Length: 402
Image 1: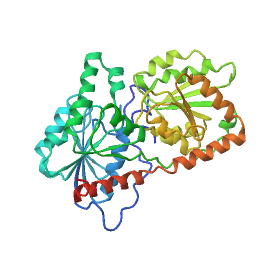
Image 2: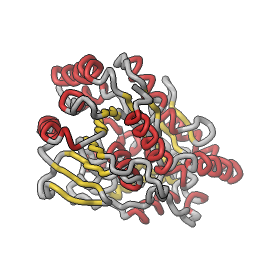
Image 3: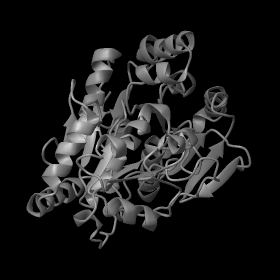
Image 4: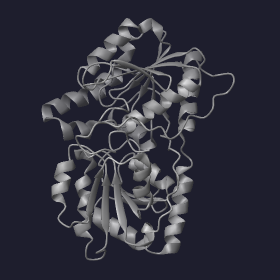
């Protein structure tokens, strides 16, 4: 399943969430029966810029509902969206824009502080400061996908980026020092310790992977196809993927590059293609997106930072390996030399992609890598993610982790 905001053309209306995997069936004795949970996140899956963080949060909420919890999802509101909705058994509460949400959601929680037993505070760079407004007996779990220091500098003026880093570092470290923190990869946990000097306990609970149907296509055996799936935003560096067409033209004159996603970089990327061998799909329905991804020989992501890499595992589930930079998160989701290749310091993306395509031109080796990819992807399910979060919440409520 692609990150929600990625799989659409820039300017197109947000597509409703396509739920391709249901949580595992709850046991008769629901582990969280009657437990009241509030999850705070700055976006939700139906919004235009939603991504992997929203997918993770939504799948966790769906699983908790299946375990008997009463779940409220508090988030920002895009123009035209209703302030409240009931979806998948989850109570959606939308308020404020992408800036005001950080003021209005804490106020919403403060007014309702006695209604919740657990608060999951998703810190996408800026936290909601739930420990300051929730009642003392309410258990607060912090959810951090990755450290946002470089992302602040990529999107904001230097002075504002410094403020963001100060809030994410010293301020959040003080506020959440007694809270258990969940992150999605080992390297993200290491960065929390090393960069933010995070003091509290950290649980690594990876993303799941949707159930996808294999695509019967001979395209991977013919003209090589490279695909990118994701949001078209600056830090994804999609232009480097587009530039693979001219960079590899000498050795791979029939190479085609497919880009699936939407975002502010769409127009710039369209103008960048000088070869006519780059196809910007914009929005694709789930089945069509899987058809393009599944028929590719290689998935490529040039992102400079990720918490994990949902599209890496999604591609792997279809037997497609990934080339990615050796950065936190992606070095966890890509098994170098097994399910893909990592671009190390001093290496060039086009060189590594060229070597990968050469290796995959051997049908035997391609089949071997595809089998390894599918086996790797099978290790990650949203059921596993949800059951681990459920266990963590039960321990928090029982006092076992205090």
